Amino acid sequence: MASAHRSGVGVKCATLAPSQIVAARPVSYREGRLRNQYRYISEQGDWDAVAPALGRAPRLALDTERNGRFAYRERICLIQIADGRGTYLLDPLAVKDLSELGRLLADDSVVKILHGCEEDIRYFDRDFGFSINNLFDTGLAARFLGVARPNLGAVLDEFCGVAIPKDPRLQVSHWGLRPLSGPALDYAASDVHHLLPLADELGYRLDKLGRTGWVREECARVQGLRHPPDEPLETAYRRVRGWDGLNPRQATILQELYAFRDGKACVWDLPPTLAASNDDLLELAQAGGAAPHGVGGMLAQRCYGELMEAIQRGMANPEVPKPVRPEANYDAWTPERRARLKSLKQWRAALGRELGLAVSHVWPTPSLERIALRQDGLDDELAGGAGEVRRWQRAEFGDGLRRVVVWQ
Image 1 (spheres, one colour):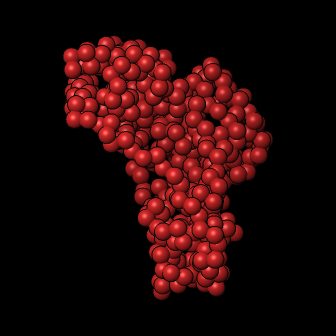
Image 2 (spheres, rainbow, N blue to C red; image 1 turned 90 degrees about the vertical axis):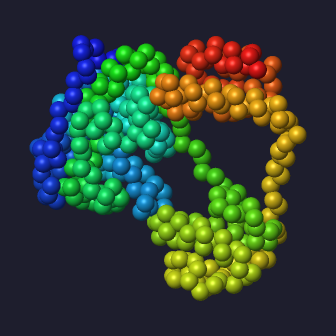
Image 3 (tube, rainbow, N blue to C red; image 1 turned 60 degrees about the vertical axis):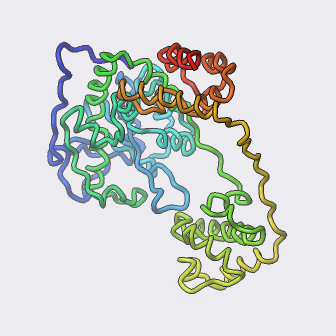
């Protein structure tokens, strides 16, 4: 992203009170009508009229709201867009043809500014098949300026002097319901309203520190993320914490219960963990064919008989084999190699303190572990053969790492 070039200290973003964003009232206006500071778009014609103007903007700020707390299949329910002149809240549940949005997101000539957007990237891919090019993630940028926990409110306050009041109730809104309330729309609009000036401030500071290229490479990595395919239910039960402590019969019961819960959650359109918690499934799998009182959540309350049938199927099914795991080669970690790894981590920690960076940004741990085990693999690590080490890390810190290894 091009930095904002200014003399002296960074210019602060103008503070906008929540009441100036939009009046907090239920949505009683005609959908698509321009309100105080944003426009809610739920008709195809309104979107078709707005999209060409957005395509002429050099930069777009974006965010999304999803319904993962309330639905079986989480999806994007609102897309917030700001172009510096206006803010638009696009309803993808009502506007069916979003092909122009996909073109805008993929356009390399338009900078897309999002904050902490890895999940947004994945869900744009899964829900619509869209990819984002020319990304600038303000959350990533803040991390490279020394911010340890870069939530949007804290970053805006620190770098722009902007305070955005966040009602905890709105942070857990059911974004899949319609109509959305005025306060919910205000909340959504505030997430993109200040992103463009924030990006200017962060870009200016990154440029002064010589870290613009670092963030550019990290953003290129993030924009390449895609939503992973759904895991088969036959193995997905291993997501339950504690499953690997079960015996084969108990694991078989857990497998059956996991699939049963998934089916019911789909019918009820609920997140599976609201149908029954993972802890409940684990306890039921260990109960020897019984269902202890108070265990099983909605599954026990709404369909106790079916729940017992699922347990019985798990008791009768062939036992699932435990996956074969490669044995850890503890003999490889000799005292000399452990001392080498400790020295490498001390180098990384010292450099992180000096630069105000998290140690994970200085050098990835798996790479340090491989170097500690095999010093002759250093050249491969510095050449990027393993893939985890970024180009900017090799360019900035590779010589220093080599000196540490040589001196050992």
